[in-house]
Image (tube, rainbow, N blue to C red; front, side, top):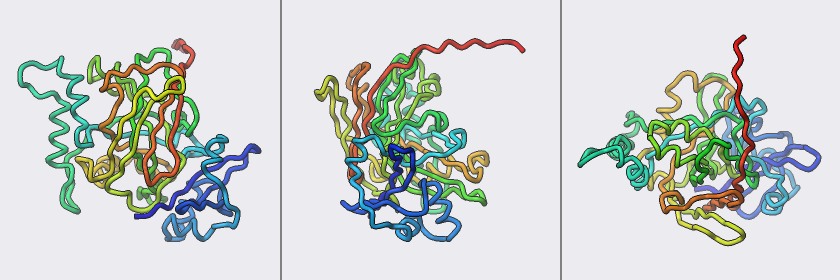
Length: 331
């Protein structure tokens, strides 16, 4: 397992740079402005992303915690054309993740009838980790938006005026770049908050698609190499300076009902998701939600997600977006 991470930095003057962090030491890289640019160079050179970064290591050290506090750190990945960054994900992928969703949907069932959510979860437990080279059960899949919906660490979430809820989802996200030949390359993984509207979803599970069309945030650190199989972190909500709710969360393959490879296969099997140059951020799911404990979030609440081997937390404050009436005109 490695703790090598890449971070994207933007100074007060607007200049962009990439940071290489290894353990407690972090330095700026030379010759590249973005992680995507570095990844394209690594693909072209036939090297790993870590090797490409090491070749560009400078002697200029940087305190990443101080830069986070200063608001200089960007999401772990972005794209200069926001329409070419896709936010999507898979749900019911973690052991225990079905309980909250199943409870939401019980009202629509009677007797011992299994909800669709529980059926999908159990199918994932049974077939989500096939033998190497085999194709397993396909998971639930959802679309969140494009790069316009990506929120930086320390930046606020703007909950739409029509939203019924704005709740955190502490997750791991896979970061991918599509090569010139259509090959998806996993660059690494990042901490993520897959912000969702759970009240809308609870009304009717067919509204899941609506509930997911919200912003999402990525942590600053892109963890390189094979993701750890067991990641343990903490998700909490701070209100008026006091911890309102706090709970541990588990992720990584050891705590999931699907292999990452299976989730990746069922996303990238669609040719439209293999367009050269595109970036994909894929949220792998969670089993830990404050809404399942009866928490009702409100404006000003701060979501904080932290988990080793990531050195920095992911924090975002809940705000309300102004109403934006939509008028459709015939042309």
